[in-house]
Length: 629
Ligand code: WT7
Image (cartoon, rainbow, N blue to C red; front, side, top):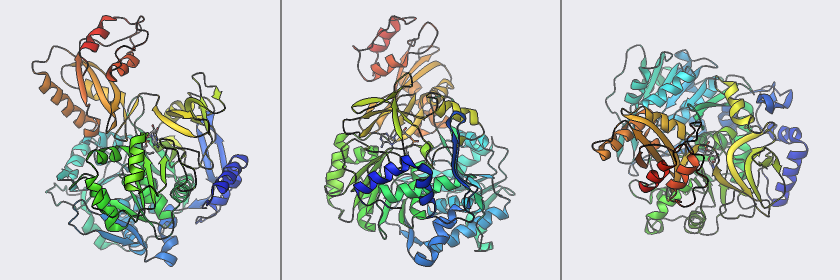
């Protein structure tokens, strides 16, 4: 499964294009199957239908756990580093993890969860989160992990969209110096959800919580009374493994559906190859399991490959900005995979937070989530990687299931700010506005993928038409990523950012329409328009232009109230950084907001607004320019 040299990469890549089925069949054989597949691939991008390893039967937990027991049952699978550095870290071996997953799977079964049922997981970064995820997979239940930073309403929307029958949560969460009420938020969400029959509550902060008789159960109590043997449910390769909600340019977040076989193989193959994982290495991905990065590169990829994976509960700046480096030194981390926003933020605190820690264990670095600027790339490479660690800039998406374009650590020649070359099996193309493929090098365009790979999104939960519309209709016959991209003279890819109305704030994907809808729910707001602007740390900041019914008496207070509304409707991550009250918005005669103009103003490019003659009311632009923040 592992490529070892650049020549091998080139050969593998060519083979994957010439004979994709042969290529992925060979990799597929290295996993544990209950029943072999009948057909490696069938696909039709026009209908958004893709199937991998059809007819094959397996269970991802047998690959992530059982398979390792004989050879490395006593090897550590997870190292849990708690929020407070003075609390003890916990190491969990493959054998113990297997045992805990089986027990908890039996708890799920005991409370009526069956194959295909949807289970919402709203937990902090504790070992129980991984246990809960794998326990669902064990019995064929579909997990839908909701990031701990989302509001009650966001949880409710996600629960209702996929009709979850159970929620797994904790009393509270420790994040830096804060204690966050998790169960209370779930309780508020559940006032709007009728499908949930039971809630399992894990004890973390021992914050007082209300426990409803007949619905709520304590995790610790439940696991006492179950067997530790739980046979894995045989799953069809194309049965759903999980749903993960993500934002698009329109409407509500959509439930991206991934299936068992293809996802497993893609997450594992990319993990092994991109990070060039060597047996015994400690892999630390700083993402939250609430995002796809955590699903693929904390849980499934590393565990299926038999690796040791670090789960960190806290935040990079608590108790101080040296926390990540302290964890690297403490656990002798070899592979550190983090986000540009974290790098830029830690950079700004200065090097004295780095120098106290021994980073000599590091062998490889990775970046994910947003374009990495050259300064951050160099800082990470030199000061954290001591200039000798390969640094992989990995481009991918929730919808792709795993890494798509990235160097293979130490194998692909690097170029700062470039995700470099596609992994074997990935066929990127750049297209112009008319959907024509732009060939050759030294070109840029919209990034599409023209052939399926095993980790590709299968549908958007409950609405296949939306999946077709969003990803397969802009450029018929291709999967459209929503990203702009440059291919330089060497054929190297550099992702330049979203070309749709999706923002990337601190690596979090947020739809402008979602934020606008939240703002518009606020009393006294008539209309709003949201755009992204360059932000030194966050990558992008959120700039909201808001029309109010009347001039607010206390603009500052009104601004804060709007932030409270956005926090309540979506979550704190979607709070605008800047709010400008305006009397009108630049609209075309047909009533469409010209975001291009607002974007330019928010970037401070006042003299470069382009053609404004088609505007309904050009005067409003002058007003907005004058009041720009
Ligand atoms: C969007 C996907 C999948 C990882 C976490 C984010 C942006 C992701 C990179 C990168 C430039 C990147 C893209 C993409 N993005 N990685 N290495 N360089 N941009 O997953 O929330 O689904 O967001 O993140 O714009 O479309 P996501």
